[in-house]
Image 1 (cartoon, one colour):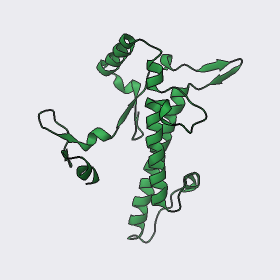
Image 2 (image 1 turned 90 degrees about the vertical axis):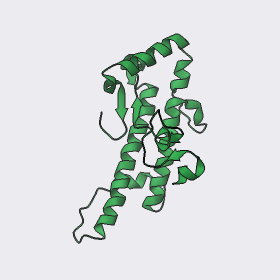
Image 3 (image 1 turned 90 degrees about the horizontal axis):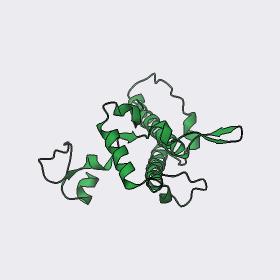
Image 4 (image 1 turned 180 degrees about the vertical axis):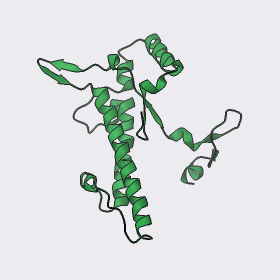
Length: 174
């Protein structure tokens, strides 16, 4: 409803079709996060120590936030169901302590904002000025390659029949 008021032309509850005019709210949300193959984000080695590549760290933050949001939504749905039932099943709520906010709704809002920040950082690490440890985003990595190499990489990724091997679904399955 809110997006419909903000943007004229947003249709509620319909999938986007090329034949129809306007645009739809599904354009604002990611269901898949494309992950470059490991050879493009190798493990960093300094002496005898090994460190995870920065892009992998950024993508792990997105996956972690997504999992926390799923838990919070399940907790909120469970609270509504528990009011109707007499013997509620207890869910582990230890993860709530690390999320800022007084109520579960506040925590959901704060983690949602953090998820959006982490998604922005995956694409462009300059989006977050507050981070002390910056790992390159897609935009920064693309400056290291010429435009032809990036276009070929994206075309290969999009046309590859096994694209699920190069992507992470945000709903928890790979």
